[in-house]
Length: 335
Ligand SMILES: Cc1cc2nc3c(=O)[nH]c(=O)nc-3n(C[C@H](O)[C@H](O)[C@H](O)COP(=O)(O)OP(=O)(O)OC[C@H]3O[C@@H](n4cnc5c(N)ncnc54)[C@H](O)[C@@H]3O)c2cc1C
Image 1 (cartoon, rainbow, N blue to C red):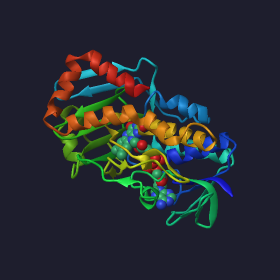
Image 2: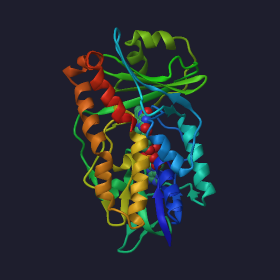
Image 3: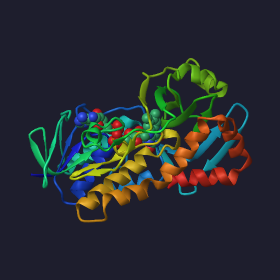
């Protein structure tokens, strides 16, 4: 019997497998896609994500991120992280680093899309394997969450993300957030010759039209070689709980608010740690998950509500007029 069977080999599934091995547990990851896996993501690791990765023995290459800069056509609010930089990392680089570390620790990864599984009092069976615990790390549209009845319908607004890379030397060491009429563009340096541009907005947001509405950014990107478009959403996903018997949910599968604050990866690594600690006899996972995500749920929901209504126009002017407030919000994201 395996100790932990992990459904989904994205960054959080792999982090969970590494945590399991560090706790002396056996772990198998089931993932249908061959790595290194790419995904629509802003690719910004907030400063707080780096020590979490270092603890796992993972140090992916990338570009330092010194802070966050909010911009509209005329104004700019800037704040540098006081704790030191975060890092812009290509998803494929992050995935390869996590997968290599997991393999080195003896994690087995099988190319499988998990369908049905069966839960008994002492174990869970899936794809001919039996495990003491099953962890759903299968992302925003988690089928594990649905199968164990933990799905809850999410409140509006429904937002989506689109991402494309541009072959361009980064012009800033900040994450630039360009606020357009109904969508925002997040510009993250990820390599000395590559920037990631991620657009977040309501359904049917078109990447090129959104960028065209942000003249300063459009000018930078005009005529530059662009990679393929990747999309994700709806972003908001809600759960009734993150545990059903011997099944635990981690990462986006456990519920997600929005990418507007760029915290998904840090939170997912914290879920991975808390889930394995609870299996190993530590504090209960549900209470830990609520503690870990509380700030994210409150701040991100507030910002998304503001960004989706008439208050949207006031976001950059307020950040410029109240630098202490903007700085405090950025510092909270940096944690
Ligand atoms: C547009 C956008 C921008 C973002 N920007 C940032 C950012 O800048 N910084 C940040 O920290 N976070 C950001 N995020 C959030 C971040 O991308 C996620 O929080 C992170 O990818 C979650 O990782 P995960 O492993 O939980 O899920 P995923 O990365 O989605 O991985 C889930 C894995 O499960 C697999 N899977 C699915 N179904 C099954 C199945 N039935 N059986 C087996 N495997 C299955 C999938 O193939 C996939 O590999 C952003 C998200 C979006 C959408």
